[in-house]
Image 1 (cartoon, rainbow, N blue to C red):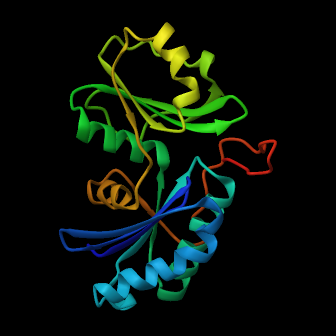
Image 2: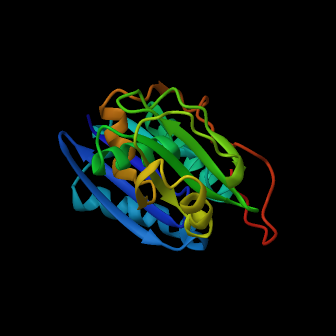
Length: 223
């Protein structure tokens, strides 16, 4: 299945293109440049692989949670391409992507997928071992409010977590067997679609996943 994937939910912008069983990707750092960099990145990737839009079978984007601005950029571009080329859209959660990547590092464990939500809060979702990546509740809470009752070994994975690690190391260290600092990647979004974890919607139905509507003190919004 030929898919184009877009992720601008964090400070790392990534695009990926699947051609059969091969996936090609590009990444750039700098949240303030996402809007101006994303289209050239997509164009470069399409040209490098000599792929025409008519050969694509779907558009995938990271629906969030994450940067409000980044989510809007990815969703808007995904919808525009889907409308223009009559393609289905797959919206994938950033928490699903983190859990998928963490499972590749540490199998047979639960995954606490997290991301910095600013204002002393985190986005988080817990994925039990071997469970599907489609049924977890995604929440935003102060780190002190995160509770996991599962007794399985758990890995902690996500982005922007360094300020919160002292709390976890002090209070929950018996639960965690590993910590992985990682960002969701466009390549992972494609792999989730290929694995059957995500369903297609129309361009009109595609929406960002906003977990909250507040903004940080610096004005950067996070969904």
